[in-house]
Amino acid sequence: METFAQAQSVSNRYSLISSPIHTILVLVVLGGWAIWHKSLADQLSLTANPNRVRFYIVTLVYEWLLFVLVVAGVRYRGASILIVLGDHWHSVRNVLRDIGIAVGFWIVAALFLWVFGWLLRIAALGRNMHFMLPHGGLELTAWIALSVTAGICEETIFRGYLQRQFGALTKSAPAGILLSAVVFGLAHAYQGFRMVILISLYGAMFGILAYWRGSVRPGMIAHAWQDSLNGVLAAVMRH
Image 1 (tube, rainbow, N blue to C red):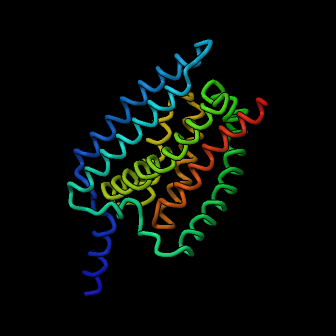
Image 2 (image 1 turned 45 degrees about the vertical axis):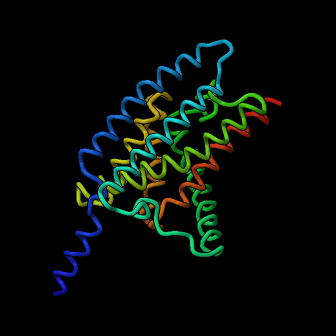
Image 3 (image 1 turned 90 degrees about the vertical axis):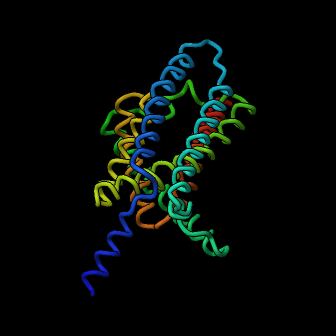
């Protein structure tokens, strides 16, 4: 009986939350977007007066559409979206706990990224993508909206959905974390090869956090804060 119970627990832990075909579709859409996004970013970097707001809005809309695609696939399978996101917050204490976890994670992740960036000889994330960072109040507002969207959508897609799907397909949580982190890095290929490596490592840290916490909510908070901070600091430094 104990062996059967353990086997059942492992089966539930590594159960698919959508069909493999749906996962392939998500990966194809991600691949197509990565190619198109690089083209958009290249155009932006070569334009004298780039329309950053349009770039932010296009990216924001894409991320929400992919979010809807993921949720639709999970719901079609008959699974609850809470499997992807983690359990509801039931009290203010739960919210504060996840905010505290997010703050601690952000500090540790920032230190690791600084070390990895130095090893990869990447001067700074902001310098590498300076042409994308906001100028002025309107662009900063759009950037923050995009940053919040990235926190919600990307953590849901990569850590909540793909990490669980890869883990189920390989019957291995570490493999799920690693594979979703690699896909996360490749989805940001427009930032260059070295940045793909750094962002993959960043994604692995988010994956470990989501697995440990059993929820993507702390990752959403840390992700949205980090992206927003990049834009705010860039705007402040220009003034």
